[in-house]
Length: 216
Image 1 (tube, rainbow, N blue to C red):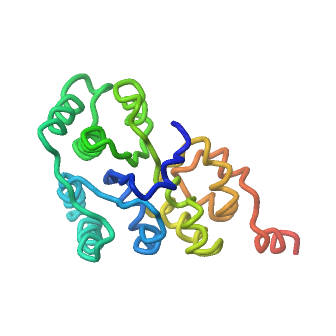
Image 2: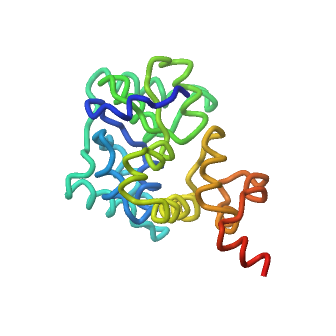
Image 3: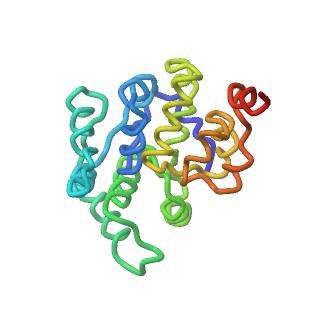
């Protein structure tokens, strides 16, 4: 995945997959995070329906998304004819080379409109690398670690937000961000995050407070 330098350009929208929406909601401060980003965030109309399937399990992500939309933080968009062609090509075929509807729709919209896609799954990024090598990709962690988000939240609140997304949404972290994420949240919180590799959880540095408590 290329370095997301385009995150400094407010002219490039970001198309968010369902996992990104769930991660942002789990932080507990999605409006602040989105408001700090220079790029607008959109999500395809397939995503609210996908989130709605979580209601029987008590998930309220669909409601939270609609609140973000109503407040103007996220825009719901639709696929055009070209987008639907890309969508169909991404959901039909062998399981190894196909994606779920939400991820496929996100990629299809991004390709159709030449915007960036926010993806957190290795399979999706691999398929994009082969089929759409010019597509700009970014992860949820890229958003959370954006300099403007750091400035808006401050180090302590950012650590809490990242920890909440890891713990409650099982946010995925790509290898190139692991060191920074575990440093940010510390070992005592990293060990509570099952989406982090077990070895990285165990080797995460203690925060200053936890180190003092261990020595006492």
